[in-house]
Length: 290
Image 1: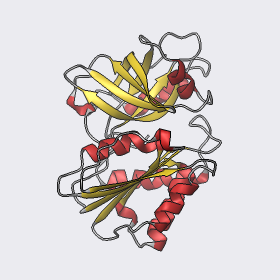
Image 2: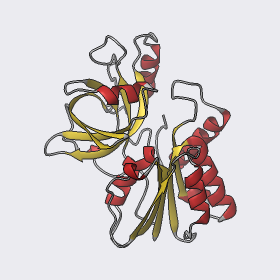
Image 3: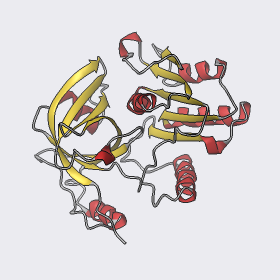
C-alpha cells in the first residue's frame, strides 16, 4: 500500500549567522506543524531552484517513492533542481517553523551560494524526513554514545545530544576550522565534548588524530560518525580494526566528498557504503535508502 510522500515547498522566514561559516535558515511552509519532523538525526533532501526559477520544479508526489525519483531524474538537466542532503536542526510545531544549518565556504556549490545570499521569501523543495530513506540513530540501547564529525555533522550531533537519555553518557569529538566555529551544544555532566581545530592542516586529519588518541569505551557503546566520506571511512576502519568495536553498532554518513559533489557519479567506495546501509535498513525493517 502506498503512502503519502513527504514532499513540500518551504519558504524562508529568516536567516542568521551562528558562526562565521554557519548560517541557520528558518523556514515556514505547509505541514510544518507535524510531529514527524521532530526528533534527533532527521535527514532530508533539499531541492534548490536553477537560475531564473522562483521555486524548484518538482514532480507531484503520487505515493510511490521510486516513481517520484524517476520523474525527478527525467526533468531536463537545465531545469532539474540541485539536490543536497541536510539534517533538520530544529522544529517548532507550535510556530510551524523548521531550522536547517548551512556550512558556507566561498561560493563553491549551489547550496553554499544559496545560503550566502538567501533572503526572506525564497522557496526550496524538501523531501523528508522519512524512514523510507534515512533511519534515525537509536539512542535507547547503549550505555555510552560516541559522536564523531566535522562541521557538516554539527546539526545532527546537536539534535542527538538534545535527545540523549538521562542515563546515557556521551563523548563527542568535532573538528571545525578554528575556535570561532565552535557553537553552543547541549553539554550536561554526562557529556564530554572535544572541539578540534583544523587550522591549516588537511580536512579531517585533526579529527582522526584526536580519535586515535582518545580514551573511548568499547563495550555497550554505539557510535555515530558523520562528515567527509573519506574521513568517515578512516574512522570506521580504526574503530573496527584497532578497537574491536562491531560494525553493527557504528552508524555512519558521508555527508560530502572531497573534490566531488552529489551531482558526480558515486565511487566504488560510495557504492560499497550504500550497499551496507541498504542491508542494515532492510534488516531493521526499513523500506529504501536514497
